[in-house]
Length: 70
Image (tube, rainbow, N blue to C red; front, side, top):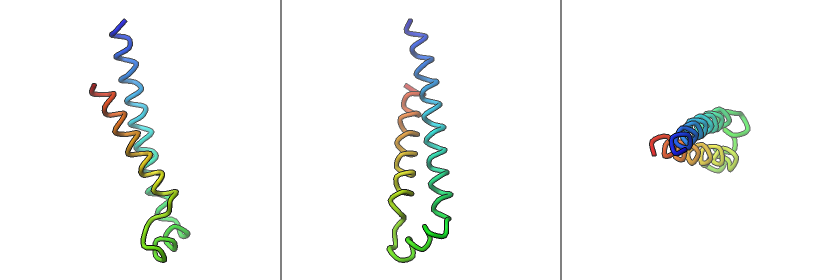
């Protein structure tokens, strides 16, 4: 039973790692948009939406790595 649980956790880890990479890439793509560039030029910082993608991607990737190598 423990072996099945271990492989399930590795699959979940891989999925979370992929989701994290996807969110980070999506945030990167959004940061190149016209509206986002104007916001960054005026405020000097990325929009909240882009930061949410970056943070969500990073957290998901870290949890995925932890589950994968646990």
